[in-house]
Structure formats: structure tokens, C-alpha cells
Length: 519
Image (cartoon, rainbow, N blue to C red; front, top):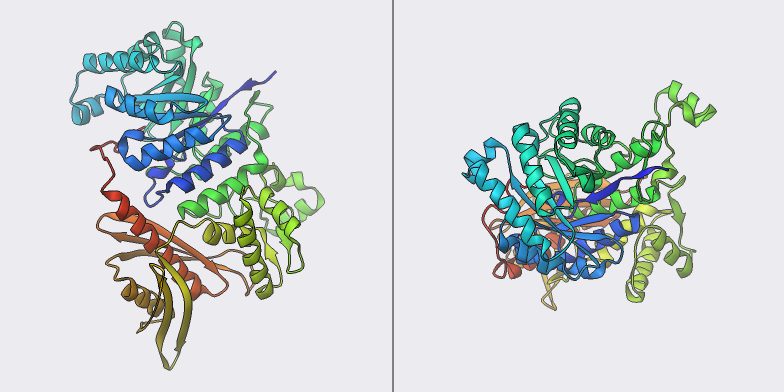
């Protein structure tokens, strides 16, 4: 019988630390429910002490999930641990995940503590957390750059204090597979009783070795892998969940292990996280990239037509990519549409389904064919949007080779209809300048990106903008068959998010350095 590998997903904590990938509570909850549906074992929902928003999102997720363990991250001090417990205590299966740096680099330059002080902090923190829950995980930040003899002492200390999971993170993506397995083998050999805990690994991808290190770690005793959807995370990101899961499944001849992941939900989940964070998946990304199952070379095409196994080691269907993404058209009914929403991973109420169906019908009148990606865009960009202060009602553009680009915009602002006009260097510039003038925004547009959702000249365009004001950075997204309308919607979406963040700013309790250098 295959051994179970626990999948610990940290998309909502480490993944959210990717620049520009901040999610609001509703978006985090949506991702958490999707992860639970996939079969993830543990969800690290956030770092509760870092802000009031993080605390509320972890608590909301803890209350909502039914099958997953919900973990809250905490440093090795009572204030952090109390805050983490307050956030996860309502979970059916709560976990406190406490950590401290152990490498001499961190001890000298960041913590300014001795090894003895760190060992004392570990013992006190784990012992204190155990008073609240039996499920306590300890992580030795920067473990792979920690002197091995001291790391072994760290693990002994955490184990003696009652840690049920011991994590050996490659925090800065420094190690290589042979070195990593030597560390793990040494711990398993030298630490008496280590077999009573779950040995965990958390790898970063700075040298492109996160998945390789994680797979090798499993072969050398690790039974929990900490990872993220699409490999998102700080710097070069984390181990990609989809890569580990599919490597174990595809090479079961080498890896007699199983996960509880429903692999057919990998691609929909990848799309969901990409849509919410605005972080597009590179075309050549393993498993979920647009080119992962594409074959252009003539020899490859010939081989695949004769026998798929010649160049495909897994099928698109096995990761949730349908044989044909063509869904339906303007004659499709409400029942079929509702079923399609469920198959795409959306759990909507009656009012949301009705709104989505109306938008689908309107899109079907403009396009010959409506694809899964189009429906996802409708739900993400229109149905599940955050509460708004600004809404676009009307946009008219005059532009051309001999015309000054002019935008006439009508918006709803705080419930009142407002109309204005302005000029720009091009149609998009004119539209955004007009909106900025109407909203009196002081924000700066840092990034503007366009992506075609599907193929064809009638495809919806998806626009992502990155906007910043007074240190608050948000992503806005919009989709429409008219790329200028999509741009206006994305910009307004960003301005609404800015307003929401500014309103919450005064309530946030931010602890200095809580999000710097964490595992």
C-alpha cells in the first residue's frame, strides 16, 4: 500500500507574499474552498499577527472549512501564538505553525541572539502552543544554511517540547538535492523519536530546484510537502503543488506514494489563482502552462497522432484540461450553464448564477462561441467583484490616425451618475485619464498588461493593471470583447480596491518585520 504524502498548501500565506499578489478576504476564502475541494490536507491561511486583515481572513477560513487542517503562522513568542490560536481555534482541525531562524547568518544579523537563546525560544514556544492544540508544527527558518550539528539540536528541542510536525525549509532556495537529503538523513539518524513526527519540507525556487529538492526529500523520509499553486511566492517562488503531485502520480514506478489531490482540479485551480492574483502562468510552465500539452514540431505531431504516449507522459484530462474547451452558445439553457459553473469549480448562490447567466447570454450574442475561459472571466471579473464605489456605465471613444483620442465616460460614483470627457495619447490613455479625473485619484499606474482569453478576433481581452497610492498597491482586472472597455473596467476595479484598502488602513495592526524573511 502506498504511503500518504501530506500536501500543505501555503498559497494564501507564502504565495500571497509575491509582489502584487495581495488578496482580499473574499478572494482568499474562494481559493481556500477550492483547495479543500482539491483534497489538500493542510492550508496555511495566513500570518494572523501581521495585520487585522490577515487575522480576519484566517479566522473566516477556519470557520468555513470542513475537512482541511487550517494553520496559522506565528513567530516564537506568546503574542504571535495567541493571535494565531485566536484565528484558527474555530477550525475543525486547527494547527499552530511556529518558526524561528536558526542559521548563524540570521542569528547574527537579524535576530541578534545566541544559539542558546534560540533553543530556549523554541522550547518555550512549542510548549506554549501545545497548551492550545495538539497539532503544532515547528519550522527552522533557513535550515539549509544552518550548521548541521546545531540544526539537529534544534530539531531535538522542538520534538522534546511536543512538535508534531518538524519542517526543514530551504528558505532562500540555496540547497541542492544531494545536500538536502544528507541533511534529512542526518536528522533521521541522529534525532531519537523523529519517526513519531511528520518530517516536512518547504523549498524555494531561487535556483530552480524547489520541486527536485521536494521530490528527493520524499524519498528520504519527508511526508509533508509545503507548496503553492503555480509555484507563486516570494522572489522566484515556492515548490509548485501541481509539479509534485503529478511527478508522484506519473512516476509511481519510482515513488510508491499517494496524495489526496483530485488532479482533475489542478488546471481550474491554477486558473482561479492566476485570475485572482493577476499573476499569469508562463506558457512553458510545467503541467499548467499553455504549451504544456502543445506539439508544434512535425515529428512530434506525427508521433502524437499515431500514439499519444510518444510525446505525452500524462493526458491533459488528468489535470483538468478538457479535450475541447468549447462550452455552449446563445441557445444554451440556464440548467446547462449552472452545471458548467459547478464543473469549473464555482459555488454560486441563485442571485450570482442569474447575473452570470445574463452576462453569458450577452456575450454569446457578440461571439460565435463561448469558451470555459470566457465563463471564468465573467464570474471572476463581474459576478464576484468586491463592493464598489465606482462603476462604469458608459464609454465612448473617438480615435484614429487623424483624430485626437477622446473619451466620454459616464460613471456611477457613490450612487450618483457622473459624466466627463478628456483626451489622451491613445484611446486607452484617454479613457483612463478621464476616469482618473472623475474619481480625483492620486494613484499611479505601475503596470498595464493585456491578455487574450481565447483565440479568434472576437476573443475577450483580459486587462490587468497594477496601481499604487501612498504605499498601497493593488491589482485591477477587467474583461470585455472591446479591449478599451476591458481597460476601463480593470482600472475602475483597481480604484475600488484602493478605496477598500484605504478604508481598512487605519484598522490594520502591522507588526514590524513580520513578513520579512519568513519561511
